[in-house]
Image (cartoon, rainbow, N blue to C red; front, side, top):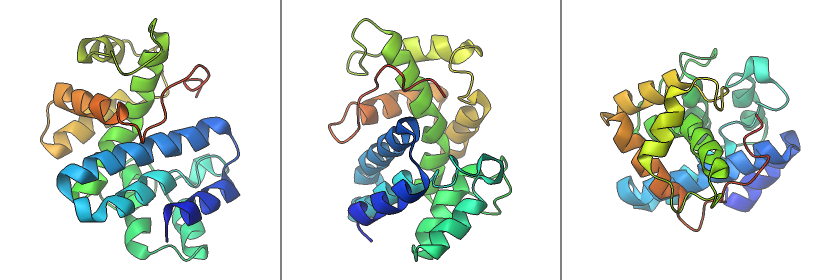
Length: 191
């Protein structure tokens, strides 16, 4: 499977611009991290990022459970399915624990990309290019800001990686500055 085929599958089940953009952001972030940890598998990491929320728009109450079924129906490789669904471990009914570095990064960065994007669009520049860790940390502490982004999941993800929260935030900001990641825009933080 290539990224074009993965987008076609994603768009079968997702129509909302927010969800499609989130998938592209996470895909780009995952590709960035793959270059550091498993460069030969960068395409796989990007596919996992793109497809991780395949079921969320239509089946939010069955997130990471229905997704496994949808991806199986579309003949997606089992290792990609497992990795995609692992980001819901302990939060949904998925039995897949994040074990591989790719899965741990997906678990940690998924929610964080939303928080970072929300912080960025509140800035005068509306960009992650000049965003600092301190700005994200300040909003991280404000539970009402981007309330849909779970701070507990972000903190658990950092811990699973053996990174400090500051390190996770900094590395994710840097990933979001890369050309393959769509930049935040107004309306993107509405979920």
